[in-house]
Length: 126
Image (tube, rainbow, N blue to C red; front, side, top):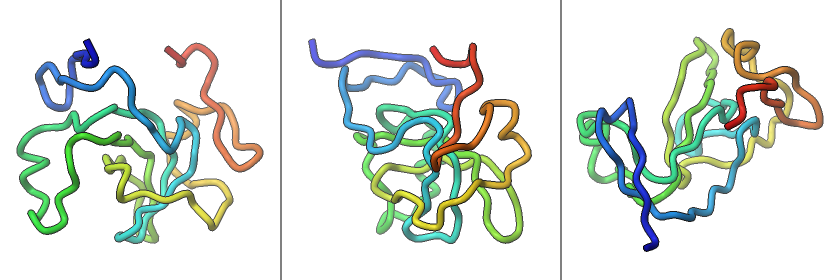
């Protein structure tokens, strides 16, 4: 049995996923989108696509990422605003800019920034 299931509140349904996946990034890592000008801090990881079907279908077919890869929840920022983003692994790269991210929700999830990454608040790990 190489598959497992979990409930996704974003999708509103049970998601079937591989028991093991290869996530390139970890919670607290700072990443950058390869095609759009924003960066963010990983605060959760889904082993496969686990958002709504409407969200997935809204991505143009020619750039729509595959479902069977890790997807990352980010506290994201660009030059104009801060927001939450949901991004496929294929569209992310490690942030070469370095330095902290300026997002108003950081202190709710992370304790501090050191050695190039954020450290999860005690008691939030599962």
